[in-house]
Length: 348
Image (cartoon, rainbow, N blue to C red; front, side, top):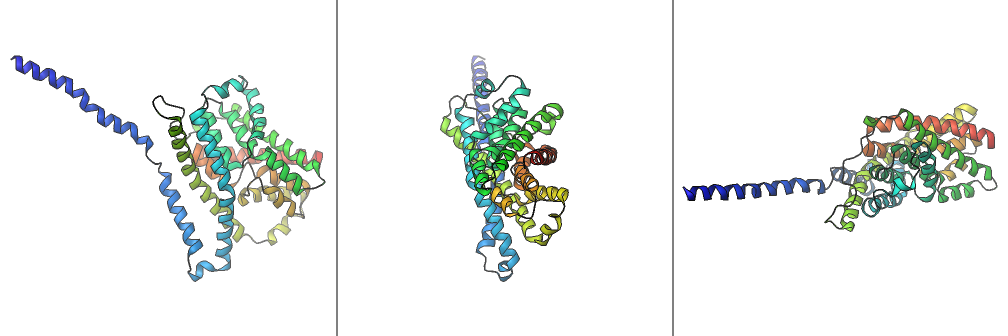
């Protein structure tokens, strides 16, 4: 009988140890490459096939134009996406969790315009602002302030304002109008989220954020950067493909049809900004080339473009969920057009 008791004691002592390996395996599951890796790989191979294929029908003028526009948008945005995801990973790994909540005002109503002004310090386009805003939310920043930053960062940073001044020489009013209209849109959208936003609309991607004890901070940075870049990159390519399709299928004669009407020209250029998906560092030169349109319409193009375009909508849907992206992009478009018309009518 003593031997039996000893065997029971041994069994009880060993049993818990046998449970640990499966739990360790479960903990490691989030470290596996995200599902978006397969999508990015497939899209990359498809585009590479279009570029390198010698098939005659793929070398036709329309397909060649589509290929050029798609690659141009992707290559133009890729460096800024790298910048944004690197900054997002750095925030995730190295920045204390309570830093942003200490810097921003405690009251969310005041935090929104402060976050909008803070967007001026990030020299990147909309592709960079989405992963950064996601990290800010996960670090404790109120979503309304993070969304104000998301909208203002690609529109009022020094590179964009300098490019606008170069594209519109001798017209400082255009630079000022872009700055004020973009800031107003970012602040209004942040306040609208405080008033009408619902938590169930915002479904950020599930991922680990913040430093964990026992793990290298550089490992945290690498994992966060890898996840954000692969996830956002696939949606960037999808948006670029959609924008390229519009560029090829819509005839240039349509531009002349809408330029004659003051109101239709504003709405048309706002819609054009959404589908062209031009990076904010270059959209001022595109707007300056549309000489047949009024200054207010061209201002609307520059205010809407950095805040709502096809690739940005795709990035927002992949990061925060489709329910958020549809509502937020629609409301942002309306507010941006209204701000462009009001401020453009007063200054231009």
